[in-house]
Image (cartoon, rainbow, N blue to C red; front, side, top):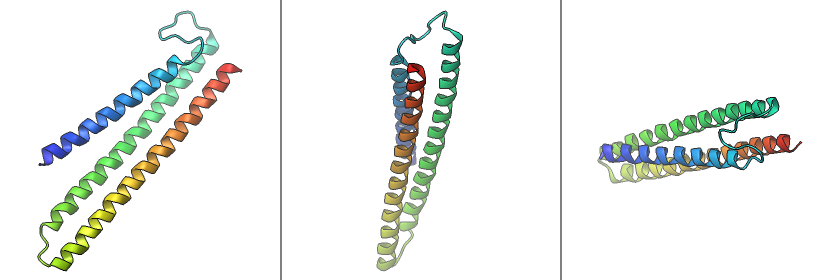
Length: 135
């Protein structure tokens, strides 16, 4: 059972990273005048590419941190789920089930808010680069 849960989490994380990589590749391909592997770029273009690489690295690190938080919340949920099996009293079972339900939804809310904030940060950084490139 644990193997299935961990495997599902691993697959979800891999899919998220793959989507992010594809998104960054698409963003870079949208830069006017910047072809992937373009030779003979000016110094300014090289500086922009270097800065963009730094930004992408930062964004990926932040996504990694967010994924670690998700895994930690998932493990806590699994631990609390097993605690429910130890309950002997129906009222305690009800209380622990409600607590687990609230914990799951709170974790989901936090993950969603983090993803929205990270998307906003990425969008702002993308806008900054496009406006610098156009200037």
